[in-house]
Length: 392
Length: 140
Image 1 (cartoon, helix red, strand yellow):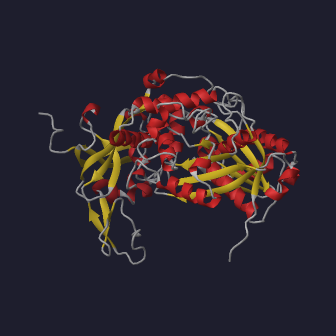
Image 2 (tube, helix red, strand yellow):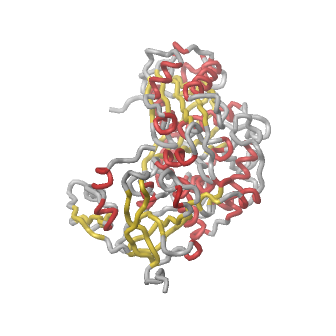
Image 3 (cartoon, chains in turn green, cyan):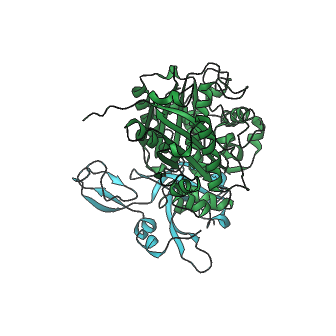
């Protein structure tokens, strides 16, 4: 049986700023993002038929599970059904895809997809341990590996095989901080230089502090409706042309090649096929740069450049918002911040801003019509690739 | 952090103390850590235990400067992704040498070591680590 899919549009967006929100708890973060999205679409809470929340580890970060029902309850949405989605750092991307399917299938006509993480209520080593749960606990974390350590293993090998330089890696962070300097919601809005990255503290050699995305608090929300209804809510609906998900090995050491993330390639190929588009059609890209090496690896695995050549994209300005291949125009995970469960949804919020032409001056990609988001969980066990197009 | 209890460690001791993996008698592929399901043969697969030699080469490495809970007192320490001679890989710490001695393709061998202690009264966790092979680690 082949079901007829409905086209799905994003009709409202909202996001908190990302950063250390000591005065704000998990519930309040979601409320802020949710109400912003509702205002954006001009809807009331009672219009929402389903809530999907991406959240990696409320239990480890704030001692709270049962996060979805808590959200519905706190937002006054009872008895609306609410579902939590967990896929480590890809929780938000998977939540978006689940919400998409709920609308595309015809089950619901208005779905709120949220993402949230409140990470700064516990101390640094506790957050490091919680994040380590995204890798294979028994065979990676048990032996003392950290998340930065896993990406450092990738970076070390990649530099050995392809001659990527430390400076090229640093330029990823420099570019992302530059974009974030125009983004009032970004965790870090300061510009940095290559020397700043190269002299920052080592975290896991060869990765330094300024190669790593920060531990952030934040929430983001988007509202999904059938494309045929979208004009009720917005003048500029953004159509979800494709959203595809793929799985890979949880353990890095089980990969045939640690310099590539196969799930990224798989999800991207499926998404481009589904959307009937090619790489050249994409005007703006959000990639999962949890560490600088990940941005380079992801651009290659998504098919935007040949394997091993990713570093060269940073020798000139082509990944900046005014370049040929604008990447992470909000500052990416590195500078915009990385509240893990929120990140995949925030990437969508950013693309919608770009495609509506509502991003701040200095980081708006001129005339952007089609965008791609790449959200990755763990070291590549879950990948979601989503392609958005501005509705006519 | 709440540490895991005794059974979670006990059920893995063969793998973590002696690098016990498995081999599929149907396709001949070897696995570490051992699997109950051969990913190639699935239900046709027949798996038996296989003790690995512990010998291998450094495929990649890093130095952990910011450690997770339970490991903070040992930082900095080296972590290696080791390509084992039998084919599969494993991740653990590289010990008995200076950080500057570690390089890609360095031959290593497994050794049995303490990994961490769960506080003063808790379980002491053990497992394999890797050290330079060829006895070069021995100080006179």
